[in-house]
View 1 (cartoon, rainbow, N blue to C red):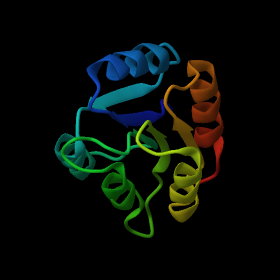
View 2: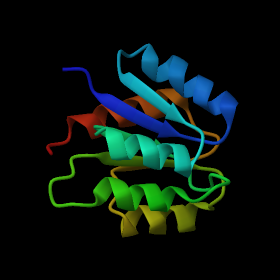
View 3: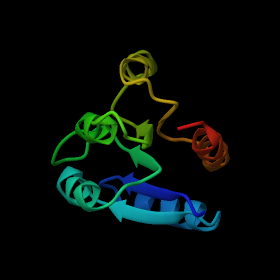
View 4: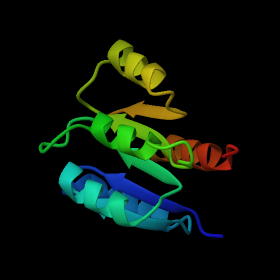
Length: 124
């Protein structure tokens, strides 16, 4: 079964990068430019993975993480990719939300793809 991924980033260039890199791997990809759009998509659909930026202009990625993790039956895993936090802060946020993956910007596409594969292979 094809894995579904929601990518939320306010940078159009990065959304195109995600679309090319993850789309080439065969994932069913949905892109959102901010928290408002992502909230609407998450209300209507379920995703195997959420990849979100931290600072989205209209809100913060942590809001989306909380939605993704809401409910005892949530199966959505989360990777945060951000340029707005330094490494120690990013590590603290990742620990607080029990993120199975996180990256600072700029990031290696190969490292991201490896992390996505590994995170999606984790048991639900």
